[in-house]
Amino acid sequence: MAELPTVPYHPTPHDKAKELLSLAELSEGEVLFDLGCGKGNILIVGAEEFGARCVGIEKDAELVKEAREEVKRRGLEGQVEIIHGDIFAPEFWAHLGGEGKAVVRNADVVAIYLNFEMHEVLRPMLEKELREGARVASFEFFVRGWKIYREKPMMFVFKKGDGF
Image (cartoon, rainbow, N blue to C red; front, side):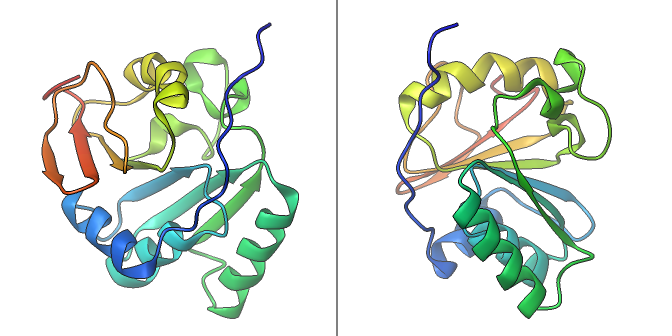
C-alpha cells in the first residue's frame, strides 16, 4: 500500500474556527467530526459556541494529550471526544466496516484543515460515507471536483446532495 499523505499541524485560531462552523451552519445537537483535529480547537468551539457533540481524530499522540487536557480543563468531556488514530483507518468509516459512534457516517458536519493531496484520498471516502445534507467545512483548501455550497475567503463548505 502506498504511503498516505500527511500535513504539518497548524492550529486553527478561535475566531476562524467560529467563522468556519458558522459558515457550515452547525447547529445545537448536531455531530461535528474534525479529521486531523490537532489540539481540538475547532471541536472546542463547536461544543462551547454551537452546542454540538464533537469527535476529533488525531494521529499525533502529543496533540491528542494536549487536546484531551484542554477538553477536561473546560469541562467538556461529555461533549467532546478526542480519539488517537489515523483518519484513514477503516475503524472510522462505516463503508469500510467501522462501527459505533466514532464512524464518520454519524457526522452532520466534518471539519478538515488539510491539503489538496489529502483531499484526493478523503474525497471518495466522504462521498461514500456521508448522508444527504451533511456538510464538509474546509479551511484554506477547497475540495476539487465538488461544487461549493457556501464560502468566505479561505473557507469552503460543501453539502452532500448539493454539489457532491
